[in-house]
Amino acid sequence: MSSTKQRDLVASLAKTDSQRALQKARKISDPWFHAQALAYVARYCDQAPISIADQAAKAAEACVDTYQQCAVRAWEIAALAEKSHNKSAASRLKAILSKVRQIEPPSSRSEALTLLINAAAYINSDAVETVAKLVVRVTDCHSHWRCDRAAVNAIGILYRFNPKSAAHLSKSVSNAKLRSKCDKIIAAGGSSPRSFFW
Image (cartoon, rainbow, N blue to C red; front, side):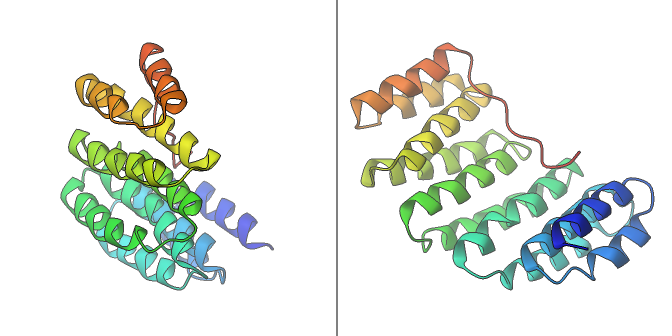
């Protein structure tokens, strides 16, 4: 069975049999899917979600590059936030954001931040704003369609939490064409954060 299918099996088991899901998650060899699967268990288990999230974080460390090591942490962070462990989720997000700066190329950094801002949306407005500012900073320094897409998405999500901050951040975007896209997502009412668990 592929790592993807193993992860999907854990996802379906986690809601009804967290112990069996945990056993199967631990058998996944690919670090990315291993970390995601453990995050599913943390999200749906009734006991020790922080301990299981710690295992997910450790699995993430074994990923092949800095992008994967940072990006896959979004599942673990979202899981803890959805379980109302916001303090732990916020602490983990803060720690991983310092590592995100090491991701190259910048377009990949933007992709990781996109996942993390979606996870931040399950924590609080301050977490969303912190990540949104980082996304826009990357975009202002590097021209790439993935960076631009990330900025629009970040401002759209921020708008749902703090319209005034979103408008202020959009005004700070140096590229006029991109700023216009950001203003359009604001005019459309912003954008909803993605779901990590189904």
